[in-house]
Image 1 (cartoon, rainbow, N blue to C red):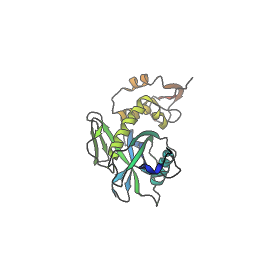
Image 2 (image 1 turned 90 degrees about the vertical axis):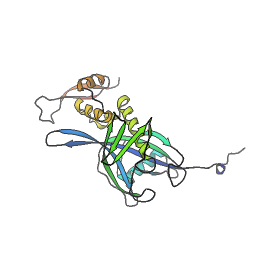
Image 3 (image 1 turned 180 degrees about the horizontal axis):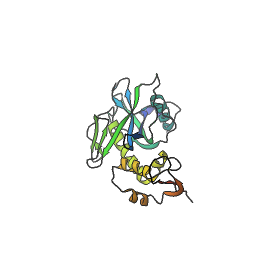
Image 4 (image 1 turned 120 degrees about the vertical axis):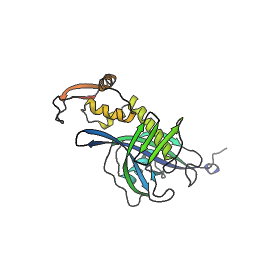
Length: 247
């Protein structure tokens, strides 16, 4: 029997992007890193004026990768960021507009300037403070958004659609990538200090590990160079490292 596509129900397909950003923060006494998440404020229904992940619908003759890159440019102005597939979300009723599944992606980047096109359905794009407590497995965004989960399932959705669940899953994926793959090095210049690498690692994993233990554990992935960090006023200059070259 010939295949007839009209005989099958078809969902609409959307894409969502979870972008985590690292921001350098300098106070009067110290320099540190802050973790951020990129959200948009929706300019139309459903969920008008609520925070949401950047994203939108797949267009004809477009791949999901092309769609998420386009939506990021339109809604946030972010370009050329490395995107890692997360998962497909297809829960019944996840979108009040109808049967819509979403293919989600994650990225870790430095915080960059944002812009929103006039014809976008996003009102604005913002970097918001993001923190995680490993003790109670809870995410805090800005001052008023909390994401808690039981056995990996978010108990209350404080954002548009099912985006609290997507963000929770994305952060767990980011933690896995940090520990086992090279996503952390995407933020680093060619030469970097171990303390700079360690500060981001510790911030994302909420893990108290000494820099000595961290350096030892990373020894298979980074290598020392003959150069020193001359950008600080410290009396003792730090050695610079680079990603270990694969033989």
